[in-house]
Length: 151
Length: 113
Image (cartoon, rainbow over all chains, first blue to last red; front, top):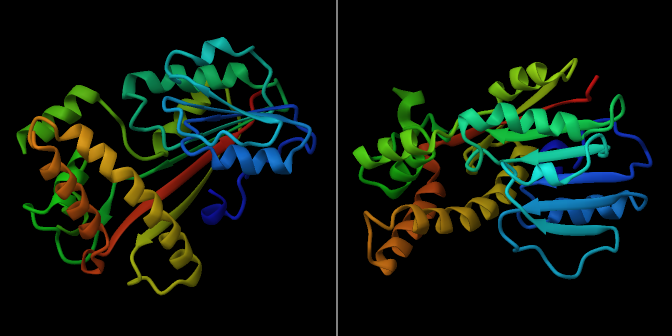
């Protein structure tokens, strides 16, 4: 996130936020970095897998949870920022509307921000990937034939 | 490749980030903004900044593709060692510059009313 966009947070959030949530936190690096920047905030990272480091800043914590069912456990209108990143493999098409609505209701009215980082399918405009190659299969698994853009 | 199509239909996942913008508006977000940036996977791209992004992304991809492949291809490749080799080969393909692989990243955001 920081490498790509130049900052972990692009939304102009309050300089002293109190509560931040990272949905689909993965390695937890985003949570740890943001907790270091915003010492006033409690920064929570949620993911299906408990793969985050145990040694974290005192204002950071990780919770195991499924974003499609567990967001309801948080208080409505309580978050200054909800960050969601690359959750497309875990949120089905019919679940997206409900997910975005839940994020909306968890944010502080008027001052809370949401940012959703996602990516397109994998594409290629060089030599076509042969259909017997593993990457061709993986690109299909992710939703497309990567060569489609070059045909 | 029929099983891949079946997998897509069974899971019903949706790609990209354009769809989120409308969903945000429907949920009540106002003035939704969207940033986009294309990542070129490989040193065939000469842009220094994007080259740095690519090198970082490579680590993420390599660490992500293996467990996904190993879990998704159990039926087609019952032998764990074959699945692991398949995953390694997929990463090798990913690092092949001739394909000129790329992906667009989306970042829509805005605050609620």
